[in-house]
Image (cartoon, rainbow, N blue to C red):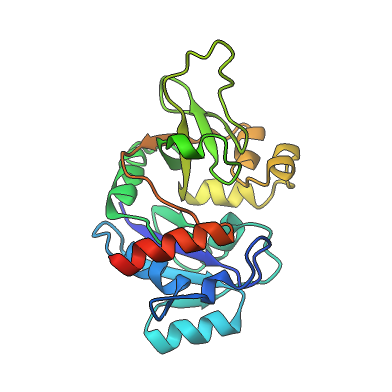
Length: 239
């Protein structure tokens, strides 16, 4: 199974502008993510896909493989699709550009799901830390017994009516797609739930494309807001 990783990297993110070029210990966030993904021995290639010449130039200076993509893309999956049109692979791994703590174990768990050729889209979950259960920046996921995602939400799901829930799961910002799934995704309009939650994976669910979810014990911290950046910077400086 040939798998390549694509890291979508916009410069002007909504909640934390220019975060991809913000430095931690002298290295921009984009570089931390790229080098973390490259540690996986299961990937044939790693490409940072951007719409910013500034990010592209930074990557070239550091020797990180990067590709310029259109600025009109509305989501990371659309940016991955553009790359898939020029590079052939069995599976395309989308690691969001704000996931500098991604581990080889995350990618291994994800690709294990994709060994089933019938699965078009995969992603990863981990037990949600207690302090993040009610944090809207930590996306929660609920799954069926076979691992199929039932829903993703910034809300706390499932709602614990009788105070009996023993476990919540946090969704990590890493996906795997087959080309057919990407081809379909870009033909679909932005869905109602996707716009409401600002979660691109809901476009698949709302249009009947199942997403299967691997479980990993390893947490990660996505850099969405300033507090996330400070937490991640402290961890990476010590690594």
